Image 1 (spheres, helix red, strand yellow):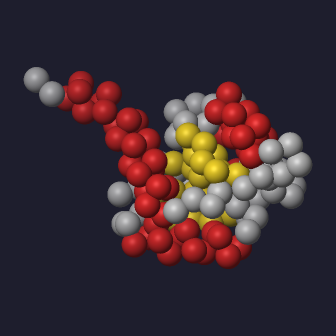
Image 2 (tube, one colour):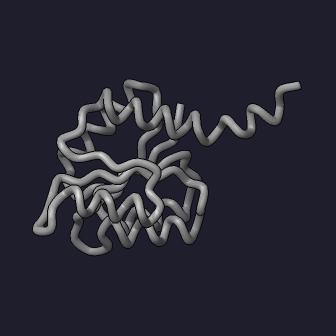
Amino acid sequence: MASILLIDDNEEFRKLMQMGLTRFGHEVALAGDGDEGLRMFGEQPFDLVITDIIMPGKEGLETIIELRRLHAQIPIIAISGGGLVGTKTFLRAALELGAAAALQKPVTLAVLQEVILSQITERREPQDRKCKP
């Protein structure tokens, strides 16, 4: 399936998502904030990044901006459970900054898997079309 970098400050959420996504056949690496995620992204390639928006340290919007600068084609899924401004505002901003998809927490594994598969398929389709006679 896919190698995924999951960035979220909630350890319980990270572990739960890792267990579930691993069952779907993905390889999942975990980071607790944007700084750690960007360091890990620089050390190994990933097919897709999932990032929370509201985190201490380097938050999700900053992380999306930096990921876009480092690798413009990497699919990024933004997730958020709210905040003072409101979830929809943060998710809309994430899309404007280059996230391919934005999901509101709580998010189910089934929905997350569906979005992951759509992003991986979308990313691979142009190459597959070029290979066909």
